[in-house]
Picture: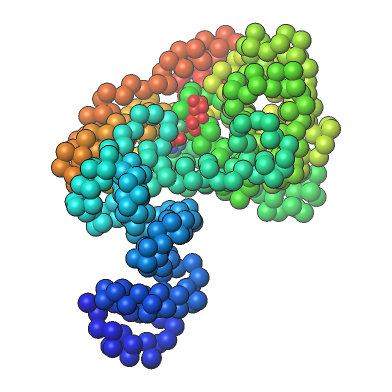
Length: 464
Ligand code: ATP
């Protein structure tokens, strides 16, 4: 236990030294001088209002004073503000346990130790298990795991209050459209050409507004991304928004067109309006082919008018689209209406291929970030994952994580993911991109009007 007197002496010399104040607060806590401890934590907060250790300290004192509910509320808020702060999760786990909430206690405990292994506490884990807190096992491949910091982060971001509510126009729809993008280009492996294209289209014009205007160019416009599934079209779109600190408005068209039945045009207009109001913004339409393909999914009469409405919005002929980047993504570009590809609409078509070996190294490193991986050999894994999409590589990690977790559950200790497990699961996951190229090759060879599929042919090494 730190000596209270010597800490006080040190503080007399350096009164604004927050770490020292926190040590003093801890020392008071250790001897249950709760008022003094609280005073010291508050002093730390008066110097650094967002200091998470001081906030956890106050929550701890509230708990010791029998004010658990207030402590829980404060911790919830703290975990939302600073999700990477392990002690907050740890204390939150203990508090959930005092409320007999084993499952939540388990969630918070696992979150804490996924950030800081040093917090492993066998006794606490035992009590959690007794309170019915079973292990959380990932079942949905696409969803971030609840056990990882990344997973929690994603959960917070998606539950972040929805700007649509503020706008009040989408109250009747249950979909969250506007997000704060939580990633930037550094979280996207490879795709250098795509990144540069997007920079040219929106980032540079925003940064050099006057220069671009002198050449009659504005920021924004339409870019269509196409390629096999899981190769990062959605990710790069979200990262584009993150890169320019813009709002990300994401719309899965197949998903919502049914919901919009009878009022699709009006809703589409509202969406563009939303994007304009939030400019600079990235308006992302996943499965853009839903507009032009699968006509049977649309009311026969609505199909053409909806496409026209979409194109008019995109043209900016109705409203100003300055600062709105419209990104469309499709895995089936051959279903697209050629009207989409005229200048002023999606005038940049970008092929998003499966990642090459250096890009796979990047992706492996990005996915491994923050996970307990022992002796990661990204190059070796990249070699084993030829033709894998980014999503396939993520699946390799997800499965290896499950293996490691199973062992961790048996031993009650953190067991790192090993290169061996990764190599093993890489053999089990089948690369999903080959099937796409079987179809794409036929279109590229026999329906390559205006060289639309030249990049696909290049990728396949077929001469034009
Ligand atoms: P779909 O066509 O099926 O919608 P997509 O091309 O939009 O797929 P994403 O949803 O962006 O693919 O990728 C799925 C996941 O795969 C991402 O969330 C990410 O975890 C991983 N991933 C894919 N590509 C990359 C990449 N280049 N860098 C890092 N991670 C990637």
